[in-house]
Image (cartoon, rainbow, N blue to C red; front, side, top):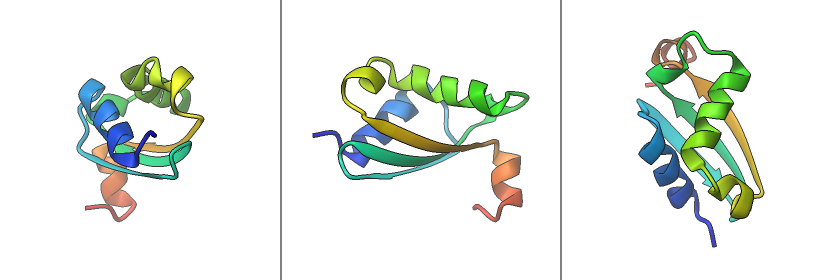
Length: 81
């Protein structure tokens, strides 16, 4: 079974993250991902970066992943650490 921790590790392995939180039930996951790599990117481009970090796992193991993708500056303005 896929765990939130394994999803988080997959994202971190492919994308430098300043902050990441993943929750889920084994099939459906929600993630907050904060990365400098998102600077100047659209929401779709940001999600594509996360999907690329997870690779084949998105097709084979993870049924659904909803994301909130922010730059460190956006995260700070939103009240993040």
